Structure formats: C-alpha cells, structure tokens
Length: 377
Image 1 (cartoon, rainbow, N blue to C red):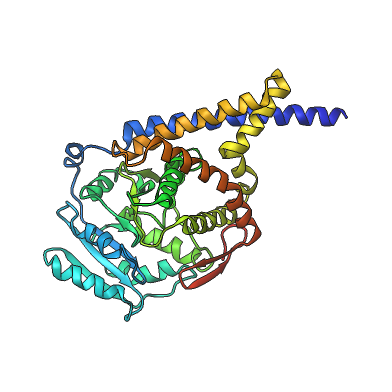
Image 2: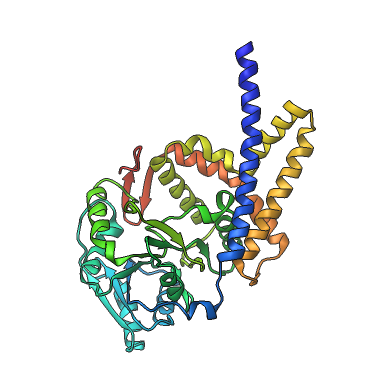
C-alpha cells in the first residue's frame, strides 16, 4: 500500500513536470520562429556565394512534379548545378526533366541514371551516381515533392558557418486546396509541440558541408546496408536549421495519404528511438492534458474537467500562434478551419501510433521493409 502511494505521488509529479516542459517547448518554438524563421530578402542577398550541387532523386511522375521541379530552375543563385538522379532509364520522369532542361538552357542541369546499390535505402542507391560526379563542395539533397522559393538556396548557404556539418529545413507544406492540406499544415506547424524539434534529415531539403563529404559517405555506406534512414554528424560539428521551411507539394494527397505517411514516420521513430513508444503519446495534447488534470486533482483537488479544458485551450492558442508565424502572414485558412483541422489531427494521433505499433512493416514506393529495434531494416 505504501509503495502504491509513492507511485501515485511520483506519477502525479511526473504529469505536472511533463506539462510544464511541453508548454516551455511551445514558448521556445514561438520565440525561435519569431527571431529566426522567414528571413527577409535583403538579409539573404548578403550571404557568401559558394557553389552548390543539387541532388534530386526521382521515381515516377505525379501531378505536381513538373511545377515542383521548375521552381529549382528559377532559383535566384549564381552558382549551382542540378543533378536529377533517376535509376530506371525508362522512368517517365525523364521526359519531364528533359522538357525543363530545354526550357531553361542557361541552367546547369543533367540527368544521371543507373543508380548504385550500397545498401537497403533505395533513395541513397539512386543518388550515388550523382554524388560521385557532382562538381561543387556543398550539396543539397531534396525530394521530388518539394517546391522552393527563389531565395531558398541563399538561405541554406548562409547557414553554412564554421563547424556546421548540415543545414536542414523545417518540414512544412505549400498552400493547396482541400481539407487534407489544412490537416497537413496544422500537423507540420504544431507537430509534437513544434516542428522545429523534429528534423528528418534525409527526406527533406538538406545542405551538407562539402569538406566532410568523404567522411559522411563512409558513414552512410557502412550503415545503409541495414538502416533505412540514417544521417551521421561527425564529432565536433553540428546540425542547424534554415530560416525558410521546406514546402512539400506532392501531387497525391488526402486524409488517407496523410494517415499513411504519419504512420510510416511513426514506425521509423519507434524503430530508431524505441523509448518513443512510451514517451511520444504523452507529448500529445489530449493525453498530456488528461495526465496533468489528474495530477492537479491529486495534489490540489482541482476539477479535472475544468483543468483539462483550460489545458486544451492554451495548447490550441500556442499552436495557432506558431502556425501564423510559420505562415509568415500568408493566411489562407480561417480560425474555424484551423480549429477543425487541429482537432482532427489530435484525435487521429492515437490511431496512428497504434497502427505503427501493430505492424512495423513499411511499404514505400515499390519496396517493402521490416523495421527492427535501432532502425535496422
């Protein structure tokens, strides 16, 4: 009985401490986004110019592919090349790229096909021939479903300071029609307290410092035989964030696609960071609110329902503030739309986590992967 009392006391203290920490993360994310996100053009034009090789892994064609790729031909930067890595010589994406190369003859762009198998990750295998022939020290790996602003590359290069090994863009989504787009925007602007703390380095726009590429390539080769999604930062170096978010604009999207992608990402996190199975659900609004309101009832005899409702209201307001800042003043969603999308996203989360735990197998493109503890596949 005494042990049970101590356990309840400790669990209640954990509930209050966790909620305080989560709200501090909210506030830090808001302050960070206010100070560092969406830099103005005059600041970026002062950045040092350094040559950059852009590696674009492509497979298949969706409805937005050509529009997305065209934004890379319109980048406002004086020294870059684009290497379109397409493993299958008969892939229809080749026709799309050739049209754009003909349309923009002044842009240094070429198609690299064939691929080279160095491990289980098909994207890395697809990129290797382009990696081997790129001519600049800095390189940017960027997916086919991303569209960029003209100054995005200047922003990334401006972050390449001493002892920075990798610059990563905050995952976000471009403006699209439909309720599914609203859910994606809300999810990526409010994901797990703040998307600024959740970089997905291989799958989003990234710049690697060139002087370290041989060491990084060695790490990738030695681990990708088993690991699906791994990036290694050499000792003494760090990762930093760009001030412009990565605007996802895939052609195939919907609520079902959103659930499928979030389930896949959850499977990756659970496999690569196993303790996330226990901690991640408690970082969500509703479950952390229930735990916090019970803790307040236990210690202070406060009404659980009232505390829970105030908790949800405060969480919602902070999420909306962060969303407005990431939108950078271009609000195409009403407060009512945001509320509905936010509520749907929060209620879907338990289902997504349960689905990820129920079946650790990942279906991605034409491959099927079984994940094990530590991220091995």
